[in-house]
Amino acid sequence: MTQFVRLLLISMIIFIPGLNSSQAQAVPQDFGPWLQDLRNEALAAGITKKTLDRALKGIKNPLPRVLELDRNQPEFKQSTQEYLAARVNSKRVAAGKVMLRRYPTWLGRVEDRYQVQRSFILALWGIETGYGRHSGSFSVIEALATLAHDGRRADYFRGELLNALRILDARHIRLKRMKGSWAGAMGQCQFMPSAFLKHAVDADGDKHINIWGSVPDVFASTANYLAQAGWQPEQGWGEAVTLPPDFDASLAGLDTRQTVERWHSLGVMRPDGKAFSTPQLEASLILPDGDKGPAYLVYDNFRVLRKWNRSNAFAIAVGTLADRISR
Image (tube, rainbow, N blue to C red; front, side, top):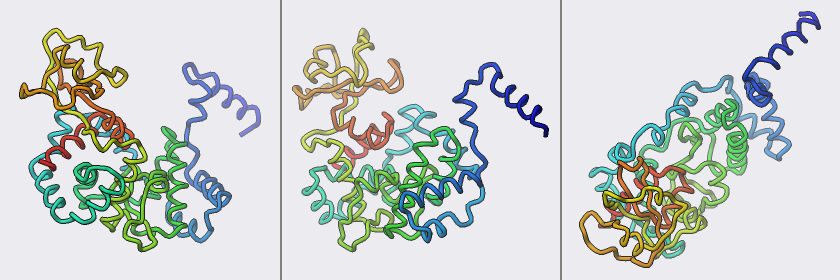
């Protein structure tokens, strides 16, 4: 190709209507050179050559299944009621009650240390991985490499990939056991690598943080995350409510905070008609499926659950399962 033709093609790309410079730059680099750049960055960040040789060996192409799942996340495809029905059912509640009886000592220790109710620890465990039964079969390194190369959230996933390599380098887990979700969430509590480095805990004292196989580490890591995110042990998460026909839907949303008593004066009621137990507590009213769908009064702990997963449906599911486990 002559220099003139090359320049002509470049100019055509630059001036394609509707394609700005940032979009042009978002086209992913070929995977091989991209992976080499990533390797160089990891070496410069202090990750050992031995770890990189082992972790990146055999990775040749992005994983199509990861990209497919990234484009079809259930939190954004299902209504809240559909999401709840799939995750908070009698089988999962019963299993949670079994775990409550199976691990009273460790749940008690973790609850006392971190001031997080055991029902919420179990609910997160249950929603995320079915109490450890389904923690994901994707290679965390390959999944994160795919998403980091893809370009949609490249910087975020590149950072998570580097963090995953740091975890391997610290020998917390062997490569073949470093499995997780398509998005790179790891272990029985589905921590992203950055969350692992910030919040994961070696509760059983074996010198390794093992959220893949150690139930004490899973419980303590979950509770530590919530505690550091601002969990209030004297509060629940919220509850379903009913609204009067003339309710002003513009009041809905997490930006509006009023006491439960004030919401009640506006016609917000519990479905059973009983009085609210915490009338002076500040709450927000949310309509996750719009003004024709279900309504919930939610407290600050709801916001903490959304730090774990920024989905109203997820936070409602965790809170609902916790309530049903503790009954």
